[in-house]
Image 1: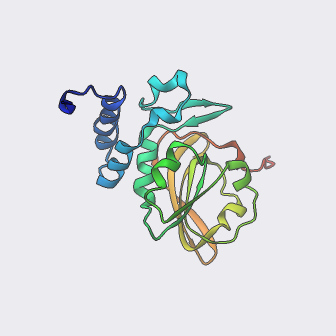
Image 2: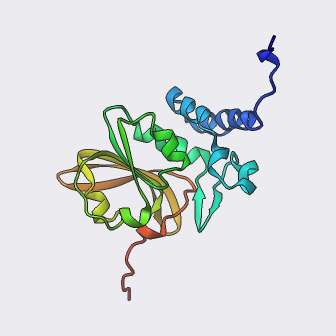
Length: 200
């Protein structure tokens, strides 16, 4: 006879519950579907072995090669703002095998991914109802904006004068305007830096 009730918890189960109760809920991320998604996906599987113990801390975790896994609250807020549904065709700018992709995939109708370098330059076709950028951008590149369908929405980080904020926007009459929503630490994507401009 197997006693499943006395089976020891997985090593990161307590950390995952603490993330939900102490980081997400206390900061206003209370949507049941967001909490369920983040309870289901093990963050420790998406960081290097040497950083697994830090997978649930409330700040970004280094992934190597200048990339970071954003803090749990960042991804919780992004999901809550994006509100992906089965009707959405989603483009994720980020790691297609990363944590945010694992959160989005079961919620969206379809999910395509693009690394930041290619998303900043590849020609757009206006076919996505939702774009999620896993990082903070200084400027929304025209090729990426062109990927968004009319009426489609975008959720991203936005960096201005060194301060990062969660931002969201919608494409209206062919233009995308980003509205900053909340100041929060988000890893910056250098591929979306604004061109250097002369100042006097």
